[in-house]
Every structure is written in structure tokens, then in C-alpha cells.
Amino acid sequence: MENNIKITGLVLNTKDYKENDKIATLFTLERGKLSSVFRGVKKPAAKMKMAAQPFCFGEYILIERSNNYITANCTLTESFYDLAYDVERFFAGCVVLEIIDAATQEGQQNERLFVESLKALKELTYGNTNPNIIAVKFIINTLELIGYKMSFTKCSSCQASVSKPFFTAIRGGLLCPLCKDIDAQPVNLTLINNLKFIDNSDYEKLSTIKIEQSASIKLIHFIAQAFCELVGCALKSINNIA
Ligand SMILES: [Zn+2]
Image 1: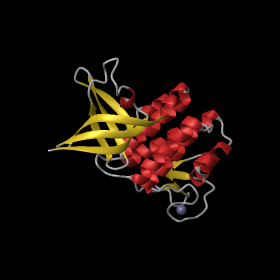
Image 2: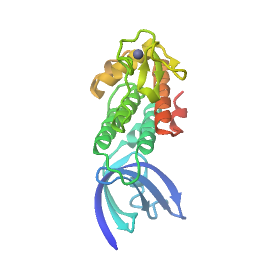
Image 3: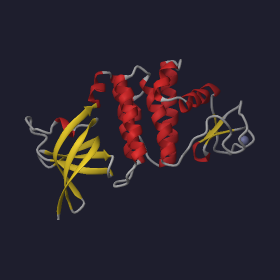
Image 4: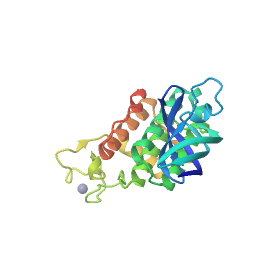
């Protein structure tokens, strides 16, 4: 049984396959995450060479054969690959792609996460906000979309305002000194306040945040760590941000 489908998708990553082929992981609007073979794209003059790269976004025609996909054609709508010209934006973009991969299961559609991903990549490519802050925003929103809403405003247990904050990802984030458990880590109040601001602001407003580069690096590592604990994964791309 062979079936042609048209999907809107974003390439998350690729790996080599056979001598001249690649298998790409695509995050698609219509079918969630899937793997598709790109034939011959390792040859220098291959037509779909560009379409088989991380950050490419477009309309893909796939041939479906008993749960396997082969890419027949692609029309690029946008290549966020432009962000490769700025190394900090590129590294933050790699974190976004890896977060999408870790947060999704093959074949599970998630329209809201799809829209969120495009928003974050657009801001990274065309905006002027600190790229680490955009990635932090994306991670917070992704956690919410997969069922882990984090609290940065009030104690996630007793709802009290917190001046001496503790944090446990698995219990929903912020905890007060009375509710903290043995695993809770004391955290810096400024870090929590920055997370609160990012959580409560749209992407467009994030450029107004006043934050040192070193503090933005701490923030992204902090929230990525929480993500890894909750999802049960490791993120290779976070090591580029230092
Ligand atoms: Zn409490």
C-alpha cells in the first residue's frame, strides 16, 4: 500500500543512511514527529539537499509505505538556517530543536507545540532578544504544553508568596521554606524573578529584559535541567552554551 501525503514540517535532525541517503526527523503539523528518508541527498548536486537539513521548514510530499516515509519533494517556506550566521542564536536554536525532539513522541500530533516552535525560531532568526532568553521561554512553554506547568510566582504547594525560594521541578517549581522537601534546592531570588518575567511575557516583550549574558546562561541551564528531570532525557546541545 503506497500513499502520497502532503505535510508541513520542520527538520529537527538528520542522520546518515546508506551511502547517499539521510533519514530526517521531521516535526509536522499534521502527524507530529516522524522519520523520513531523503534519497540521494549526500550527492553534491542533489535537488533536496537543502531540504534535508536541520532548521528547514516547508511543505513536504512524503510517500507512505507501511509506516515508513520517503520524501518525494519539498517546497521550502522558510529556512531558519539563517540563524547559523550568529553562533549564539544557532546554539539556542539547536536547544529548541532538541527540546522539541525530547518533548514529542512519534506520530503524536501537537498543533500548539508546532505553532510555539515556529514562534521561537522566528524570534531567534529575526528578533534582537538575547537568544538564551528566547530558548528559556520556549522551554517553559513546552513544559506547560506537555503537562508540566511550572510555578515561578508562588509556592507551588501552599500558594504563599516566597522571599526565600526553593525549587523542585517534579513538585511544580517554586517552593517556600515551609513546603520544601529534602530534594529542594535553594535558588537565587533574582533567577526566579527573571523566570517569572519570562513566563509572563510574550516573545515580543522579551527584548525589554535587562539581563547579563552570564545570568542568561545560568537561566537556560537551570530550566534545561528542570526539563531533563521531568522528561527523563539529556540534552547534548545545552553543552554548547557556556
Ligand atoms: Zn509553601
